[in-house]
Image 1: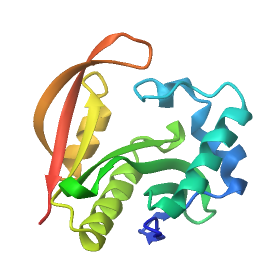
Image 2 (image 1 turned 120 degrees about the vertical axis):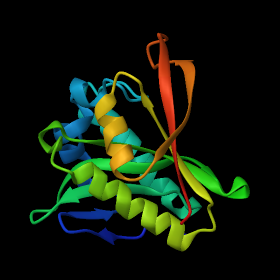
Image 3 (image 1 turned 60 degrees about the vertical axis):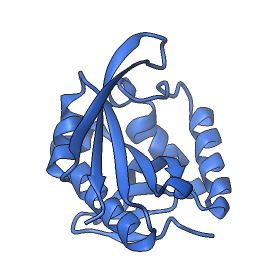
Length: 176
């Protein structure tokens, strides 16, 4: 069951990851500490870490995962990812996670990608809502979600990847 179908937007082409994306993913965002600062995973120290994660995503596409490689038009070089990091079809919702190369920040690309994925999920599943969360200190992520019509539904305290207690804002968009 393939659920990661190609998505086209004005500036982006979202598609499945391929082995040929490994070096670009490492170079463009996975090795950047600024990109990974608020994420659940640590900055990749070498391309082998990136190879392991991308190969696992490729392997799990057959199980119906939704993991898109964000490429920037016109050259289609990989610049980020957007994923249903938690998927609960039985509860009719999923939670998305996303990141993009620092050189692409503040250009509207991530909002464009989120809108495309939200539209796809609502048109191809029976999900009633989509959730996302962000570290309260990462206001750029919150701004992006609000731009995409997500609304705040709560806050939760939890430990980050380094074991430090953090405040996370939970956002949600409901099926139109």
